[in-house]
Image 1 (cartoon, rainbow, N blue to C red):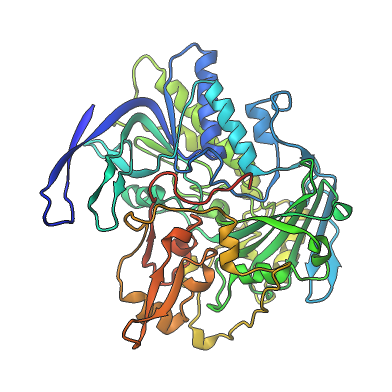
Image 2: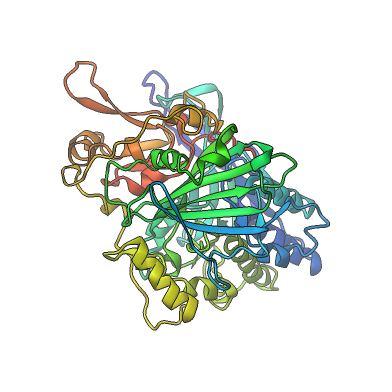
Length: 574
């Protein structure tokens, strides 16, 4: 199938050029090669093979290799993986580090208060595995390909396609080889259309296509706004004498104040060398525009309980991503004609557990199980050209995913009280540990994260210590370790709806918070060439695709879209 489309070039010396976009047909198209998308693809092909049906499943992923944009802690609960691939051990899944030791702490500036992890509390990790999620995702990709799934890494889904009746028809990948000014380069190629009976959107947290679908189908009409966090992570090679494979450490408290939600993790991997994965999570509903999640992370590493593990070690990787923290109150409508939302795109993270991979994978499996009988029925039972599968949402609400998320639904919003962190911990102890989330009420969040910042004049600037280059580091040397790279001569993937807003509103009222909440140094305010005033400079090549700017910008003026396929971070087992 060939779709003609006129590409109007910005160079006025060139005429409008008629270009053709190739279109291909599949039964199912999946956007996003993360745990949810791959679990859905694997389950679909398992069902097709079992019932001896032909089913073409195509998966597109913006990273150049499957797993290269994946970043997670990660302490994995293996329940969904075991359901999907019961013989994962024999097949060589990279789950090399069973948890052997669980440590939880409240930190003050100089001391640590140990907190016992009682059986049944969400932080208990008995039976879980410390993994490098990028390696697990790459392995899932290999399992999918063995079953006949067509994987297309390096192809960024840039556009949702619709039938005339308004149902989803599929997706189109973006054009490549366009210069910054909109003119075609010698290597110019049109994107490709992938049409399907049903399209699964598993883009991960705050997906840019999901944002469009929310508006078109009014999917957020009956749920709370999503609330998010930013997670920053490093991998370190440490002194072998300090290495304790299987040890899991979590903390709350310092350096954050009691009214800023967040905490840390430090996991000792068993990968044949003394590796630790450590990170810091900050809820994006924080109020002080002077707060920098990156610098809070660097400061935390100097705590007397943390620094000894890192002293004499070497940092080898850095990255960041946003996390969904809204829980079941914030899950949108999951189905619409022609499509479904799976994984971290709608947001199935269990916040107190700090785990979302098992729920994301299960959502992909449930989607596959709901789609398969409809796809293979003698007659296609659908009122629209794109298949509508409301059974997926019903099955999810009857699954252990919903039961698990419902039980912890009040833990995250319970932190919005005068006592902050400590009030939330007391609430968790009483209503989760004792009553298992059976309280007859559901707490609300405080609105969107973008609306939570106070004006700078109402807040105290935060003085951060200078990095020492041994345990703490500056931002740009950190970004270099992410391997992020984008073709410089391409249209910007970070766009402003109104160029005047950053200086007039964000800088004028909030002292330019984007230069602090971005974990990659993308945004900076620099003097105008005239020397009179400031302008916002966007260093898009630094972007690690965390989407924090699109979430936290108090003016909601930044729009994140996919760059050319293959651009972005180059994580190796993050």
